[in-house]
Image (cartoon, rainbow over all chains, first blue to last red; front, side):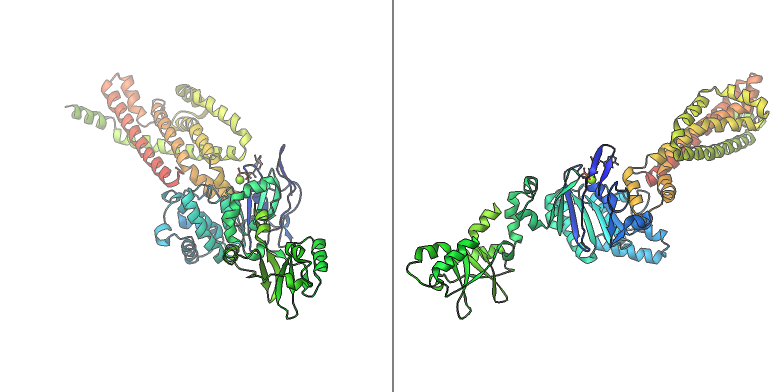
Length: 356
Length: 212
Ligand SMILES: Nc1ncnc2c1ncn2[C@@H]1O[C@H](COP(=O)(O)OP(=O)(O)OP(=O)(O)O)[C@@H](O)[C@H]1O
Ligand SMILES: [Mg+2]
């Protein structure tokens, strides 16, 4: 979709698939069109071009008020109504919908508990009697009150100091699991994006530069801007979250142990790989390295004789611990196994060149 | 001594009844002014392009001398309380309408954004968000109107409206400084009390509905 304000193109031909149940981050500099995108989703504004569909239904066919009642919205400025108590703020929509007082009270109690505010202390206070962080929690509780399947959050933690922000993020990660909603979350803060996001869309000048999981962005940044944003220092911060399967090279072909060395060399040169998986008759696996084969091609006949015993790794092992084990065993590569079959190779040299 | 003289003036010139009469005219005028002022404020909020001409007209009325206005009204509506009430209302519309309008439009944009995003209707937002949040502002306008109204009701007494202006007129006609003094001071005290009450109400509204 595209949205213009006079001369300004606020959102420029973006196309976005949001997966049910995911937390999608929109991140980008000021004025990159994040808020505009959110406001089109709940029809506070209409796109000039393009359409938005939720579960396949074009939202223009849904009454705006009905649509918005089913989409929770949280903003940085929080926007609690100052003349209403916390109970009244959270219970506003239920009141309009004609819930009974008991139903409203029990829902408010439930939500305040969810956002870690003791209900009996906070129910009857006015917003200005709450700290910023407490108000932000109430804002979240209010957005959840009708149990909307979709939640739009526009820099909800932006106004908080770093310590509190971190605390609310931690709490939010827990809440997110509990509520199981589709969430579109706008932030300026790449750390927040990495902590909370299932996928991250990077916006710049109204467009989406790249959309992917945190790992996609780290490992395959689309351009310089993305790699600067995700930061190379981040690689080391996030290497902790990577598993062996993230960084292995898939095992393209498996060479039979009886293959003559010369043929094996040709196969490897042709496929452009320097390491190959070799299977012997007993269906055990070994690893052949191109330099070794070249060195020893005159002494040995079959490939099997020039192989090294492999260092086995499992797919879902943490990358860091795998590297540590390999270092301890002075293995220069690892053979990644899945269900008894070789799935790929972990090559520390290749890994470093991809990380840096 | 002094108290005796005050008591004598008070009794001889029926100041208790005059006070009741005065406050009665004042209340009618003020209530009428609040109704008209808030309605006009609301109407220009709905049709904002009329705001500049309406406020210019109300400003023009405001600068018109009050005695002149009262005199002009007499041939139109006769003598008595009616011209006084009309004059009070005319002078009080501006502060009330202006503050109502300002209060309604100055609700912070993020509250409106959140309200709309929650799926509240414009009408609901007007009645349950804009109006309550405008209360302190409207109260401020009413407080200004109270001071105007008090003055004009007193002035109206000189033109046959009754109230505490009547003994003042008697004092002027008979050249009796004691009457002028007692009635004048009493009007002043009443005005201060009413303003104090209004100020208290305004402050509590601010506490209850103010955003800061
Ligand atoms: N209602 C509006 N009228 C005119 N221009 C607007 C309006 N809303 C947004 N814009 C413009 O559209 C562009 C995108 O704005 P948007 O609010 O979506 O940015 P953003 O990514 O949310 O920025 P920030 O991080 O500062 O909140 C900006 O250039 C902004 O000035
Ligand atoms: Mg924004």
